[in-house]
Image (cartoon, rainbow, N blue to C red; front, side, top):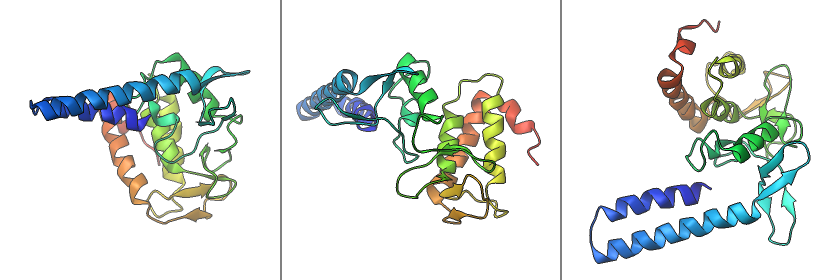
Length: 207
């Protein structure tokens, strides 16, 4: 998804160069992106009995699918954030519901943090990065979803005030990486998006 999205963007840049070579490369980029999108649409959208049509995390080309999501980017949850689909796209919305619930085998749910995790950090560790992406893809105009996630993020730092890589859903002191620069950078990007879309959230007290 991310590759197709940004190859399309790169093609727009190449078109500005206005040479025969650049035009040919831009055309090749658009063709490649279109082929990837067509493949995802044809093979990567599957029917889930509870959520309807959703994006599969992986397919093998022989009819089998891996239905999950991982906190790392790119993820299925981030598909709207990176611009691959509209945040109002029906398949994406179905997928988002699947990802943020117990049908996703890497959904970590507990008193400290409820977020998508992944296979390489082990069970019960959700990623604050996934909570950040959840906020950045939320279309809840009331801000209720984002407000709850902001509070969870701030309360999951174990008093350090920094975003960790993974945090136990049940134990705030069980985390990996005291300062996960990627997630901290994304936290800043999230604040800017909130300021643009729902600035009222920034005037609230999260203490």
